[in-house]
Length: 362
Image 1 (tube, rainbow, N blue to C red):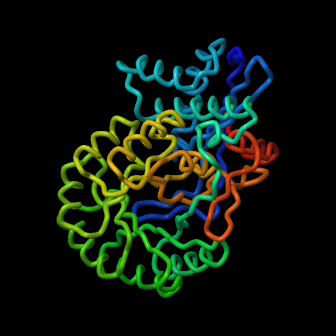
Image 2: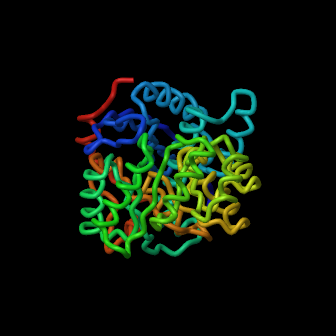
């Protein structure tokens, strides 16, 4: 069967509200700037994907990069792994981190979606995996004991979540511990609790807080130190029994390789956008398998439910559905399990009216 050829790459920018907003110790994120990429082929198939450059200031530059890089794909065979490798080689001087990586990941994910659509298969099946439900953890958006306890209880009731994660990092350790205690009271003894410090601590403070959190049966300590500090994270992992989680801010498989070789994490959670799309994720999954490290996801639930099915050490899917208000049919969760959509590709169905209502002119 001849390979299809890319006929058109369409890029749209959307700036939608996040309701409720995401809160952490540093800021409140009330908007979801998304770049949507559609790839159409000469045989009439189209694939779609989106990325989340976090801030409206990055929306225009990311869309511009995706348009420019996408224009270079027109007329090329729809071969995502080949195109990914060539893009990494071409970016050796410019670099393939930051917004460049985000744009490349959008193109890669849309290309894989198109390939799966052409095959008439869910993406995970195209990747060689059986579509199975994936256990989630509810990634909470609130801040502080009262807000998080209420949100955690609702996640257990409505989603059937058996694990919850939330942001901590208040000035006083005791306030963080009070937050954990409040969430525990809301969810009961059988729900796993994980916490995220968003890279905010020093090694000494991370050890102090980690030991206190161990006593409260917290299951992972996420990004306690700056992501670049592999040596510090490895030392912290040696000092604590509490598992160190990280990976959402690794730029590409090379950064993951460096962290795993340093022993910087006990668990990992690459981000489909920052790790390099579907192609980058599959390389990351092979590394996690080689090191026997459990691998969870970060954001991008539509892609992640497929990618975790094809991940040998799959652990948990982060349920934080930022694109749901723009979709005709968001990812379904039943009894704490994310379900693979019963349709080809990633199963993304945009609500075109919602996209138009929140379109950004960039």
